[in-house]
Length: 388
Image (spheres, rainbow, N blue to C red):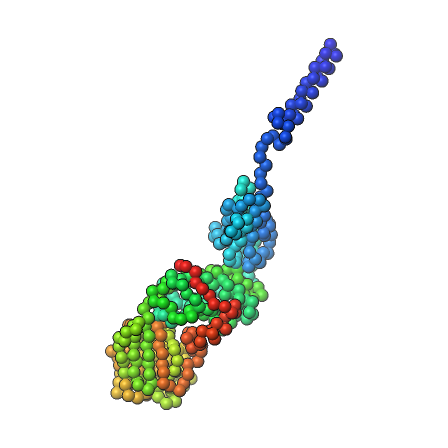
């Protein structure tokens, strides 16, 4: 009886062993299932701390092609990125927000990989302002001004800022950025903006390293439309202002410019701002007490205080002599018409005086030649707009 039981047990054991090694009868192992492809690789790796915000996120397929990649911060904002032509790699297009936590999810074939990392916080936050106003209708000479909260003293920092500025336009535009100072960089097209052009600037400043510990923390967007070409030619010799809408002369105004010693500026300026009623005070020009006069229909041409404005007290001189303190005096009806006709960014050219416009006395992009303007770019090259 004992031998019978032992023999049965041995048969059962052999049967069990044979069943385990059969592989479903195929003899190839792995249960006959398909092995999963290795997951994509992600840089920065999961758990990485103190990642530089200007360091790109890079995802590479271990096999096959990437099918989907997302990089999302804790607030749900997604970082822009671009897939390579062969589909094997993906990289962020712009910087990341400093002091933020990001999660990367990458799909490649049947595999998925994730990585969560944190960017280094900014020691100093680079803030920005922009001109023209969002949604504004501007003249053909209007520059784009990017005004920064902190100085960007190095060429590398300036280059990083310029690379972050994405220009889009409904009409192809070639232009360049120029550093007016360490805190301001302006854009102008090579020629005047074409009328009717819609323009959008996206300043991808978040994550831009502008200095030691100085990072941009927020992207900015600006959209505007270029209006009709308004061009005004003012002559100190003929004492006339000729106003053009496109190529058509629409008004000729008798004017009086600056008297000797207070000469008006000669140069190509733009209408910088408009104010229906202000007080002209000589104290703002360093000569307190010389005059303090309320004026109407004021169109500013320089930071230093040159305007086209109504001057009912000098109508007798308008059209024949120059008697102002440097402004362009016009009759009230003419000044009011000009005020209503003019958009910020319209071209105003003054000729015939001995006093030359100083570059930087207001937005003065047309006071320099194109070649000279291009030299003010940290990257040293033109910018071509992408389609809007």
